[in-house]
Image (cartoon, rainbow, N blue to C red):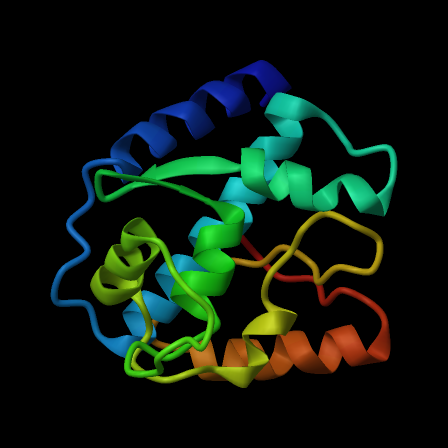
Length: 159
């Protein structure tokens, strides 16, 4: 397939993501969904905004990396920090906006997954490889991602 056809397919999938119903998902389903969504968000940002010239620009790209998931416009930073990184029951010591609190309450994980850092890809050479995570195997897939990251090479996987 040529690149323009793949980009069109990506745009169609992103449009469908906007109407997805995220209520009633299990912890594993949420975890796999949000890891994949955060990675898609970053890869789409590279397509739309290009490759950053330096690592210092990465936070700006993460803010621009927006996606509509379940009717909420989120960026990669929100997904990473307010959905994936902190358990839903944990109260942050820093102040949150009402929007951040709403996102956390609606989509946040029920408990923290320490290995999630090995699953998130921001496209840098220091970053983890992009993979597709499944709810049925997410724990073992995270363990493989950690092992591969610590070995210093991405594991080949079928997508």
